[in-house]
Amino acid sequence: MLQSVALLAIPGMSMFESSVACEVFGIDRRATGGPTFDFRVVTPDPGPVRARHGLSIVVPDGLEAAEGVDLLVVSAVGIDEAVDERVLDAIRSARARGTGILSMCSAAFVLAAAGILDGRRATTHWMYTDRLAERYPSIDVDPDVLYVDDDGIVTSAGTAAGIDAALHIVRRERGAADAVNIARRMVVPPQRDGGQAQFIAVPVPECRDDSLAELIDWMLEHLDEELTIEALAKRGYMSTRTFARRFRDATGASPAAWLNRQRVLRAQQLLETTDAELEEIARFAGFGTAAVMRHHFVRMVGVSPGRYRQTFGAREAS
Image (tube, rainbow, N blue to C red; front, side, top):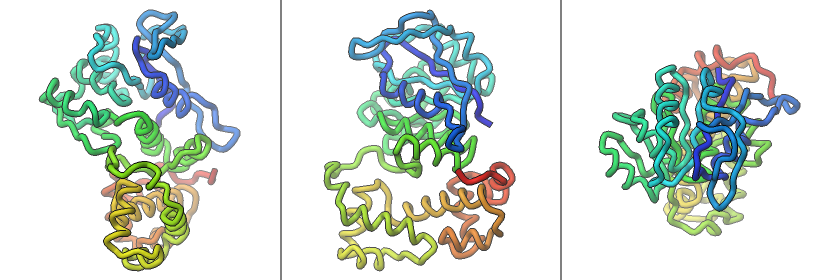
């Protein structure tokens, strides 16, 4: 289980992505039923560390404070900046110990320089994916996703995708209830899946269409019903083609893929917080049968509903 996290402070790092790590892993949320982590910030030379935009932070702990943590987080940095060899050694050593690694945005270049992405699938900000693939041809660079989790090495796309990747790790290691608790406190959606597109061509304001937002809220409240694209389009007063296009533009996923993801999340929460039978949970989540639920659950979560309940069950709802 994820209990300790270290943020690696590097000269030229982004304050936003660094703050994401502090916000997700550095706050004690036990008062609201959420988790707490043993969180620290480390750097090769303790003291002031220069960040972007003329800012600096004072880091009291050296790299030795990261030894033995469960997760090492690397914040975004300039892709052409030289990286201290001590930082690369710390990343290599962490990986050799089996420590989880999370890179945010352009920090994938740091992981690549350390050699731990060789032969693996990874991503970074869509502006830099071509550069990453060209500079490190042994990496399978995926330019079209929010984050990639390859055997405990998680690489994320730009800016807010770091939040999605961090919540994914919490969900994977601590369960959906803890991830939802953190997301609720941060006032961000807990459900964005790593396979969603990073770059959505439609301008952001159109993604905030009130009618579509209301329809999505309604869909979340009626996951246990049969929600066909034809019925949803009719409810939104659109043709099926227009509805499918606008839904993908707004969410980065097709209606069917989005629904399946929400239903898996609903099933995760029910498995954690209730003792209902699998068939009953499948009906509540909208899958109809336990067999259908198991198919989608294994594909998205990587384990069966029964195994998930063994790991994360018997938890009080937060």
